[in-house]
Amino acid sequence: MTQVNSIQSFISPIIMCGGSGTRLWPLSRSQFPKQFLPLVNDTSMLQDTLARLPTKHQAPVFICNEDHRFLVAEQVKQVQCSNATILLEPQGRNTAPAVALAALNALTENKDALLLVLAADHVIKDTIKFHQAVSVAAESAQQGKLVTFGIVPTHAETGYGYIKQGNEKGDGTYQVAKFVEKPNEETAQTYLASGEYLWNSGMFLFKASRYIEELEKFRPDILASCQEAMTKVEKDLDFTRPDREAFLQCADESIDYAVMEKTEDAVVVPLDAGWSDVGSYSALWEVCQQDEQQNVIKGDVIAHDTTNSYIHSQNKLITTLGVDNLVIIDTPDAVLVADKDKVQNVKEIVNKLKVQNRPETKLHREVYRPWGKYDSVDNGERFQVKRITVNPGAKLSVQMHHHRAEHWIIVSGTAKVTLDDETILLSENQSTYIPIGVVHALENPGKLPLEMIEVQSGSYLGEDDIVRFEDKYGRVK
Image (cartoon, rainbow, N blue to C red; front, side):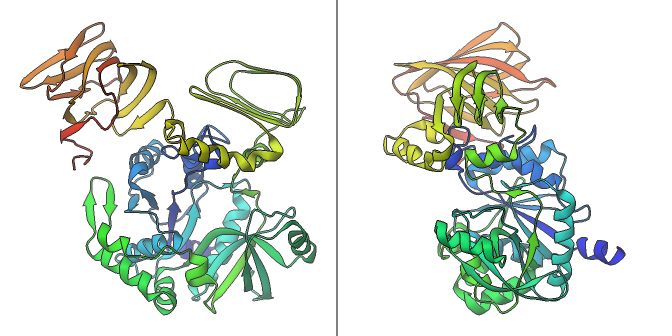
């Protein structure tokens, strides 16, 4: 046990926070995707990933994009995870470059670091079995192996890639015979019957130094771009920013293609721990607690003579009668009704919405910002109403608008308002008016959340009509 704990103390969790989760629309959207949602319990999937980490490990590293950086920072803060690194990808280039950034970052502090690469949006129900698999993988990784975790299949799944197991190594790992692409139904049945194939989970454990060595051997171009990007890295608040121009020269490649399919040191650890990538509403239905009628009910729902369904209400009462095998999702600005056997095709609806440039693909009605959040309560021609919450001590950017005026009405808390050169304090039931072109700022100097109503009026009300002069969150360009 001492040896296992000693090895685990070198583990650096690398949590990949990318992905848009389009198959879980309208709950999951590009600006607030599934990894940040509490889909299975009261905490987000990212927070669940943190909670299941082995007891002894180094501070985790989160890899995310620019748009999600404050979501990651806030959710990490909520679970009191200290000393985390948030590494910002300048642009998505798949897993091989992303992990290369993390490996190079780890090597600046610990040449023996073991990288445990995990996705932020997976479910693993049996934490004990997961820890056991990590321990097996860690010992193999210490010997220079590049370990992947293969999920013991429960059915003939056509939505996953597979790993064929080779010879057993005698330490709980197996040589990787080959990686195979997503099969058709007949081939998947053959894989399942053979007992030789595992689902490819996309989780890995290896020494940072070994990954860099193998990447240099097989894809030196990717490594060179990542090295240059990390040589010019910048620190920005809680974030680590690799150089954008250098990283954009990097090829778009997965770990599997770049390294794992080519290296002679790839091994796999079978994992049978209730894993799911929650890639659809049918998968979400499977991992959630079902009632006696095999329904999963979330929110204000009355289901009568209803079976085998997933029903989720965020906004209003949903009632069902005499239906089976449905997915019904209600959000404040969109409703989805689908056959549970067809939910893999939700992305087709999202694609149609994108063609129409509909905002429902990107944002919820409630939008989170580094200073708090706002809820777009109502809008029409030349007006928009928002309910705004500003966290204690937070401040919106010093800004102005060319096309809109704003009225602010304080509901609760205290607001410190700057209008050009004038600063005033407003409290409950007080209000102010910000004309077009006036430089203004809003701050919560109190210890309680500031709640206010904002009424915008003007010829153009888009979020891009913001000219920022100063911003504590680094959003001034």
